[in-house]
Each structure stands twice: as C-alpha cells, then as structure tokens.
Image (cartoon, rainbow, N blue to C red; front, top):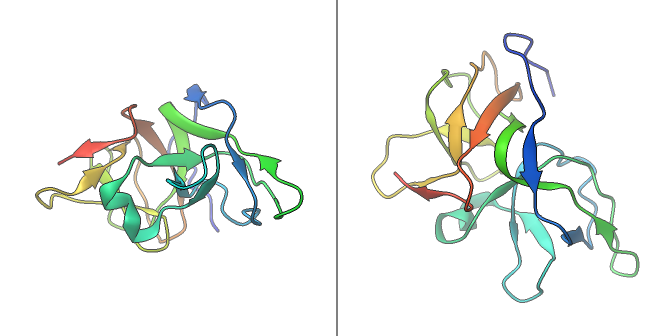
Length: 140
C-alpha cells in the first residue's frame, strides 16, 4: 500500500465507541467497514453490501479472533485516512466504496456516499484524506 504525500492529514475525527472485530482486520486499516446487523458492536469489511447500510472507515488494525475480540477504532465523522481504489480520485470528489472496501469516486445516482476526497490519488492503494460526512453516509 502506498502513501500519498500530496496533502496533509489532520487526524481529527470522531469514533464510535464499543466497536470490535472477531476476525483479523490487521491488513484492513483505512478500509471502509460496516457494523454487522446480527451482532451489535461487531464490524466487518463493507465491500458491496455498503450500498444498503451505514459505512465508516477503520483507523486501526485490529487482529481479533472468535475467542478474543479486539477493539476497533472506527471513524464516523471528520478527516480520516482511507485507501483509494482508483487512480482517478480528485479533491472534492464524492466517494463511494468498491468491492474491496476501498474508496472510489462516483457520480452514479443512488450511490451510497461516505464522504468527499480532500486529496488526489495517483494509483490504486494510495492513502488519501477523506472528509466523512457523519451519520454513516448518504445517497448521491
């Protein structure tokens, strides 16, 4: 995963207390996650199911197991780091989520939007600043 140095990160964001992972998400830092509907407080990678649910961005790298849940730092509002799923993101773009839980720019009607890009991506895997809109997203 590369790191974009084109814009500064402030790291000022709000998190949702009490969320955790029972799976290894140590390689998922800065990806988009969502809460499980069947288990309150538990998170998973968003992927394509984010279109129907609230989405947030994982800021730490929890390595949970079924017998040892680990706290997850999940941002829901503010400026966060997120992984770009395309090299075409420009500052100001509205961002949705792709099947690998990376942020992607979108202008598709009824697309779930988690926030706005505050920097550009030059390659897939760049870490870019994103302004989360709070409330877990909206429709474009």
